[in-house]
Image 1 (cartoon, helix red, strand yellow):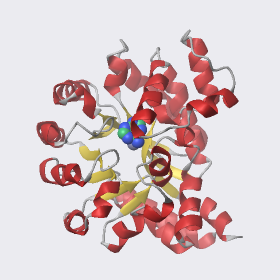
Image 2: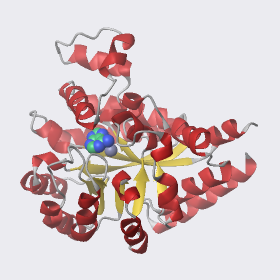
Image 3: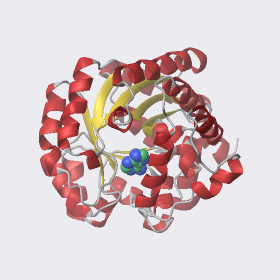
Image 4: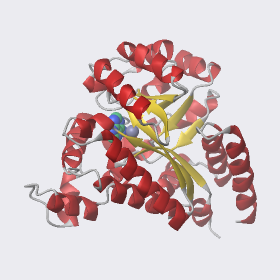
Length: 336
Ligand code: ADE
Ligand code: ZN
């Protein structure tokens, strides 16, 4: 087997993928029709231009249009099922999937029915593909901490399979500190905590996030790679980084592969996972993420397998499930 074939066969765990960002182009066209939207796209080729982003804010505008196409709670069952089918094709065995509740509640959809719909998709995909999945709710920073609290109320009412919170969405102009109370309350509710940070704004926000939100993991973290003291602090506190390399190139969070900080994170002792973020919207999947690190940054197969084990170690699985998944991954790797 070539190195590239081994990389594709590696057992993997996805820590950072948005369910809406996983909508396949064909499914987006179906959603446009099912929702009666008036958009000038009829073929998958038409969508190529739509998925070409000038920068991170432009990506979020496109993402919002995709959100508009979800007009019925039941849409979530199909997109969640297809997300897991695509993950299974990359030998991903567990997924921690992001769902931005308020994006839909503010458009008139029912939170509880969406959670049921997501869990139906998960259960069907677990049965069909043997992949497991938990849910992380993105409070979406640009809605503000007041809405964040309302979303926490919703999770308190119905938290079926919800294990964590996050703050994604716009970053510049929305510093993390106002979310301090939301993070404190989430921890009290027994939820794990993550923050998208250092993707669309500078390292000051990452410092503020570490100090005031103290999350278990940071999504992206790119800006921290420009500050050795900050990387040392992140390592010392045991905060893991969910790296999403192809996303970072596609949104312009980094200018080139050579500038990507993933190796610096590892050299500073930070535990790093590799993730696909919004796979079809960035023309990627988990196999491609691992392959690109091999091709562009010289990651060896052993190094990539270590990243896969780190992803299990820093996942939100229960300790026993982590231990058995690590053993299973190692046994599988030895057989490849
Ligand atoms: N929502 C979907 N993808 C995102 C990203 N990469 N950053 C912030 N919010 C997002
Ligand atoms: Zn993300």
